[in-house]
Length: 499
Image 1 (cartoon, rainbow, N blue to C red):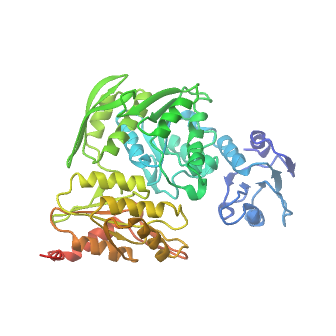
Image 2 (image 1 turned 90 degrees about the vertical axis):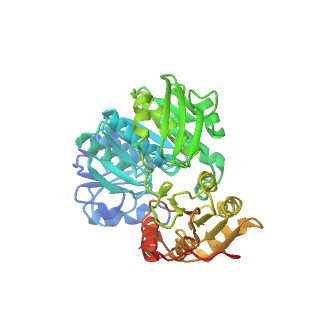
Image 3 (image 1 turned 30 degrees about the horizontal axis):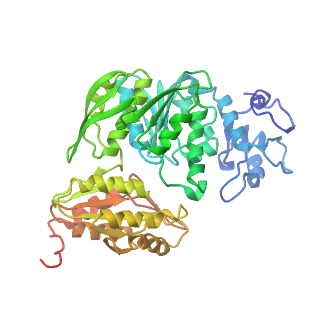
């Protein structure tokens, strides 16, 4: 595609150099530049994109887009814009031919439940003959290919490229998790959503957004733009959540609205709910009638996720009966209350819960099925919202019988400092100990567990790494649990005091 055609989409401030060059690709990382590429310099968390202009040109960039042009060592067309992130999204949309207009696009946003809901929607769409792709926290799915996810919502060029690849692979739809970071940074700009889902909003990412109001505003942008492009669109909103009630009252008038929840005024609501150690059963009342659902996945929060998925697919014309049939046999998404089988008589689960609300929901679910003690292993990530650390400690102190506070992904913070901040939340409630080494913490919990006890390893879920200041090491809670259980063999659990 010629540069002069592309730059019509971005209304540049200035253009210096030839507009007739042929553009062979787009890049925002100078290391990915190839001859003939257009490089967009973005403001980064630690370094400015403009620092890499010469490297991009050295690698063959034909054109450069930046907010602050600099003298270059080699010739390349320089394009100045006011907002490089917006320009990147606009260019990506144009370069790949607006692929979202050729797919049914479901976007899912919220603090908790995005991944599970996205997997549910994916499976229902597949059963409905819609051949879905997937973009989310756990992985990206393009036809038969699965790619480990680098972030929940990729950069704009990556999104548009993968949507284009999905179309070529025969996909008719795509399910995407839409993060607040992705919305603020305009990664999803120009996507033509058919359905936007709001799951809930609880404290998280305040290191980035600073206030809950800012966090809500970021999520709300997905719904403000809904239906403004070529498609009829529907907002699917959880009104069991107070932020959802507010969002439903202010959603874009050009989009349809479908509320869900256990709330009696929800358009799609769960009734006659029964939960057990085997899952849950309930009736769903909706504009399409009344249908009975049975889930194998545990927890009331998964009833909410099932309602969200059923509503989203209903908005695309798939009947709730299909959703009920699909969800009846669905297993948990990877690292989402994922049970690790063992022969020691204890229940062992790995979950991604990394907020106080998510941890409370999971512990409440496990408390209902635990005959003995409930043991929790968890930590908090470095360089993230520090204020939630004591809140998570307070939840564990209140809801678990015993907790082991350990390292999560410390990044460039001192892991001891993080653990101490979490421990401060316990106060005088609950028993706990601190163990810096996550493997040792998990081993300690498993060695304590007896028949009838439940062990929860929380915080990392599907992740297969642990991130420290200067290194990332392989570490998957699920693999570690399996290895430790194998090594324990028939070893008896630790004797409790007084026995």
